[in-house]
Image (cartoon, rainbow, N blue to C red; front, side):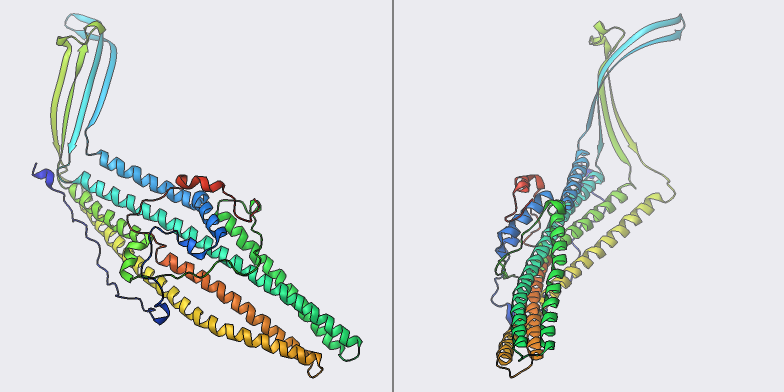
Length: 474
């Protein structure tokens, strides 16, 4: 009983990491943000776009990469159950009939033998081999659960980014459509003035060139939009030919949410990839105990009982009763250093998993810092760009007024219109980059996931798989 309380090998302790007290990018621009993430919140709903909500629900239910991660998680669950089953004895039942010819002192004999029995065997977990195997199985199970959460978060974030880029592409298309309409009016103006003899033929050519260039750029946006639409279709488990998303009209419906980054120490509990790496280190530590337990002998206990007789009618009579009890203590005296090598292999695997865990944590810190920095820079840049748009639009209006009055050339009009369109397009692109960076920050901080959250399987969300996307034609 005292030996049964032993478990050879080191007990697991989470690897120590030097975690900073705060992120480098903390600053006054973040003071208005809340301080805690709601771990039960569906983070994509913060953007306030029902189409995005529906798309992500469909991806949760039908994305094949999520299904693959779920299958791996179920495999890990089964493996953990197999390891835990070793705590219990194995019980078997047997029944047989045999007809044989034998030779004895009285000569050859032909006879039947009937038997039935119950066999029980159990290997005592003296050195903790089974307990370490269960530890490894449970840790691996938790690692694959975190991998499932990481896969789901990655798909959700990729889908959100593709969708937001598609909507900003729609904004650019709308901008070019309005610009094409304005350039068409400018072309008509120059033609009238040319016919009246107050404009040059070169003014008409410049107006035509500007209009055709804008139309070409607007057509080019269709290729970008189509690729994003195809990517979204694949993410929600559909063929591109079976999915379409009509262009949005009016301003962008999605808004920029306030995203709390939390503290660096929170990242160890909120990022599923970090949690997975830590659980794999725990599993590797348990395998060291399994390898060291091979140095000690194993104790197996067995028992069997049943009946054996020459006739079925006599099978369960008292004289036909048979039984046995036994114990087996076995160990390896020499194996050419195999056990030592396996122990060294397990230690090396643990060291590698610890290094991988620490590197994953450092990578997580970098992703958060990168996206905090990106959002800070883009916020400043968008404010400056907004003033540039206002100045360019004013310059365009003044140039058109001067051209109508005949006090400037059409080249000035073309220059100011081109600058206005370029600045407006840059402002839209900055908005798209901000939205994409905000999704990346949410992903980098774990998306509200917490260590210990129970994985949600796709089958639980299956009713949403058939839900149509608002405004989509399937």
